[in-house]
Length: 268
Image 1 (cartoon, rainbow, N blue to C red):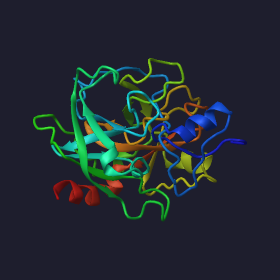
Image 2: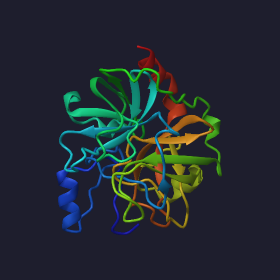
Image 3: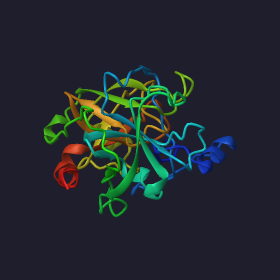
Image 4: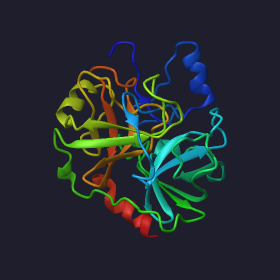
């Protein structure tokens, strides 16, 4: 991993774009301090929110992307979405949740809601993991199907066939600002504990998913989006080293680890 850095997969910010322009890399510590939005689906296929209506785009007025593309999230109740803690560093008033919009530039489609409250796991930034947050919608998405939380930590078994969704960076493997998905099987805690030994991977609270040879992954702009397994919110896009690089799979917050705290916020 010489010359590579631990990068949170958040939304795109001007700082990130500047770093990219000069060949730099936005980095974060093992505590996953946010470097701003930077992830998208690589090596995936075009998906449709009609099939996954609980997949929510979280835009931000400070995003340099013309569409406001920033992070992903998941509808878990009519008025609640789950996203990554590192996606919530801006004021609540700057966010808009968008449901049912496959192509972000097509504002004639989908529902929108502002955010009235943000809850961030209080342990985020204090220790590895805990990259989860619950946002309250000012205007509930009534009638839209929601995704239940995974509550069984044993679901994180090597080879489990999970799927990640997002509108993020495709590294030219697909259309920009367009909803996509990619299969990312669980590689297991042992693998990520080895390859990310110096990056702060924690088996207690994170999921390692992707391919040892790379090629398919979540990326910048996908942060906070859903990793789905067996019809449940299995993980939340958190961080990685590069995107789809061999030996550097994606890392996801393990929802089952934080399910009790998340559910408490969802029910409040």
